[in-house]
Length: 289
Image (tube, rainbow, N blue to C red; front, top):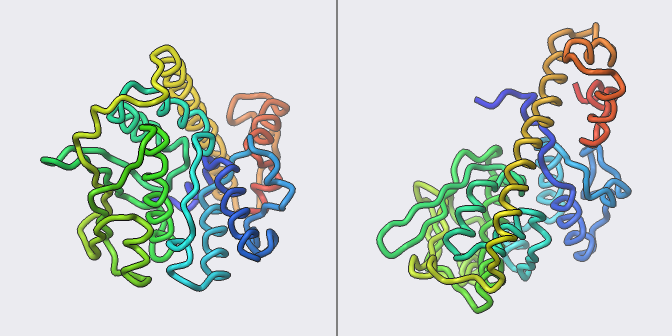
């Protein structure tokens, strides 16, 4: 079970929020409507170092789904992906020796790209399979999360390999919400619904393909940086969760910032600075609880 305050972990890069907002603005919607009730302003989108919470991302997606009110809307949009969309993780994948190594890197460090799910990778006969599990949200948000991720895989692999790519099959664990043809056009392969898991299947022979941007020194450097950054993200996200837990444990008598700092055994100014780097503050956390 996910505790309610875990939804306030700030691990999602602002780049994902701004990318989705930009797509909506290009389709005629306003930034204000897309960001409604998220606690974010259009000005916040300029701070690409800021991290937002799962709760804020879920609210943004809920806004988008309400505004669009068309299950096939995203499937009909052209998928646009660049290595920079994934930050350091993207460069770690791009510099890997083979597609298999790039996929392993993606699975190992996918939380850096803020996926609201667990991602695993297995080989089954002639198929290499990316499998999704433990999605943080359900219903339409689940569907959006899965389809948004799966739509971006083919163009990403084309960048990595430097040549055209098509998957073998996409499996979804829910019924078709849009016209089946919209799914086939979006994924360029057979799509099966009401399956036990959400899976993205590709030809396993491609795993040994060398990548166009392979560079062993860069790959090692990027993976080390990914490892350190992921560890730091987990520490900082846990900090916010611990503070929220303190606030929720004392309803009506919320501790001051200096009292929280004492309980965490860090200085008040240090705590204020770390919260600011995470895009929040003592007052914002108070307002949230």
